[in-house]
Image (cartoon, rainbow, N blue to C red; front, side, top):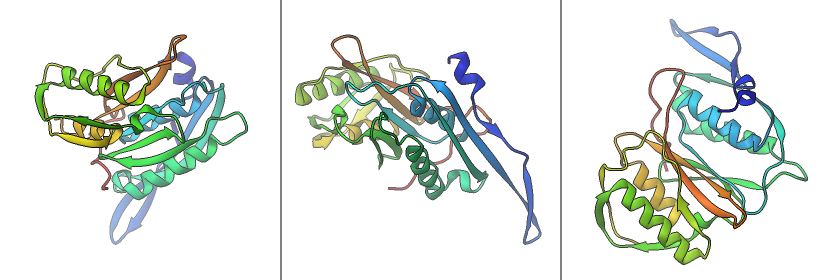
Length: 231
């Protein structure tokens, strides 16, 4: 992770103690700060994921690189509300609003397959309906086949990139799908593993191909990731 992002990470304000029905409930005011980095929204999403353990994917708009920028967002969280899908949706919706601006790409928030997806309003190849037979294969092979089918059906080149924290040799079962959005299929596949996983989808090179990079969801501040948000 670039030093500039590390320096502009999430800072937590002093913990507040609230007495409720004889119990002490700790709440925390969190300041998420991203300063002058490329793709500030992507950097902010990664900070939220590693701090809170939320499953969030990020898909880059095709042919529209994000300019450098800054994002500042403050929210309050407790151990109970950290796993609440309503809080997650509220924080992510406010985060997207911070991205608004004349030169900023347009994104929307989607919930599918137990993950939150920050995806461009138009142009993501993962919107493409795909059809695949039932298969029991190593995870790496299934991901390669999924990318090939998205490429075939969308006309946009999608390749499997770096994976982090995933055992690609682990055998998985993908049930047959018929004209289902690739994003939904991918989310369901990655969330049937022993560990939850998300991804980034970025454009790369002069040909502007898409590179899909799945990764295990790590919560670096301790504990384990919260449950997936309900559909």
